[in-house]
Picture 1 (cartoon, rainbow, N blue to C red):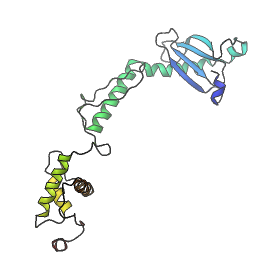
Picture 2: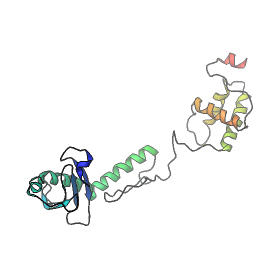
Picture 3: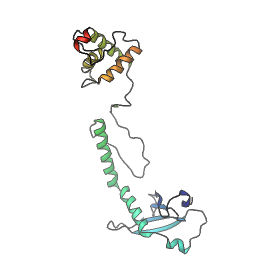
Length: 220
């Protein structure tokens, strides 16, 4: 396909295709050029330089003209290929994998060994599987009916507590002792639990009173 159809400025990089089994491992397409360029670079890391070059017609049957040869941006092709060569080497892959593993371990509270991943620049990225993680916030799995039965039991206990300020606060205090909670859950969360417990027919007792009421107002 002609790169003129991509509405890019002449000379912009359209694509870089890695050909790991080729003597010229990088195929570079530039906007406005009639040919793409298969290139190989020299192993000198101090300065990028081309070691091999082949012109590949973007449209079948295009003949090479002197102007096409004059238009080859040799130094720029070398820099583009060198950039991808650095990305494709093993050290880059290991560094990228280490950064990704550390980020996953921190995000999901995992042991770094549990979040170990591998990265290969020559492979199409797939989904990252994180073992042993528990979803947090949005995306949390739906609660079971047995969970809402426990909420209903806590609400009934709170309703009989003469020291309660509200049903929601009573459930909140009791939920803090449940294995899955290290601290009291937010009152807004408890209110949702109570609403769902009612919807399931598990709790039909007093409704949660506004949490801003005083102790005396609550007992009235």
